[in-house]
Image (cartoon, rainbow, N blue to C red):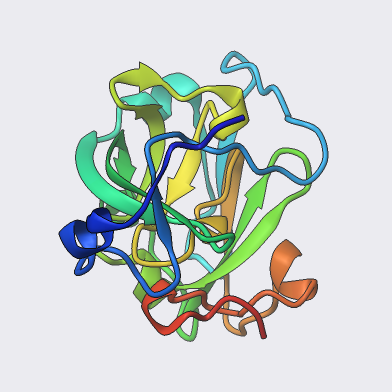
Amino acid sequence: MTLGILRGKDKAKYGDRVPPNQKVTEGFPVLTYGGTPHADTKDWKFGVVGLVEEELSFTWDEFLALPQTTITTDIHCVTGWSKLDTSWEGVAFRDLMERIVPKRGSSYVMVHCYGGYTTNLSLEDLMADNVLFAHHHNGEPLAAEHGGPCRLVVPHLYFWKSAKWVRGIQFVDQDSPGFWEQYGYHNRGDPWNEERYA
């Protein structure tokens, strides 16, 4: 598959938007460990558990009834590609937090996904203005291979932190590694500092 990598003069054109050692692609590569889960929205549930005053659960329809946000942002994969001006629609993490009361000391979140994938993030990273749980990409329902029906989008971190096939979040008081972090990926994943691996 050709990714349509842009080189040469495009480095100057996009330089201030592209982190070190990244190449801009016009495609949208699919990188997945294992098979692609196919969660039916009729059965899909989003849970909020752990160190919260009240655990919550949303059906698909309830999730879509929450305030909806659309963002346009650049994304950066740890494997070296960046895709610019991607559009996502979904529930902003900040809006979801309007319904959640974390218990004292709860400063990290483990994201849980269909297929068993997990990733860990700080509450501070998740509270950034453009972090959301997306169900649409570029105006279309999010395809399963890209994490549909719902994926996390954390644009300021490498894209493995934007977990696919999200089914819930767990609030915790101590940081612990998720799936890729256990295999040597950096705990945070800031692309501007090239936090690729531990």
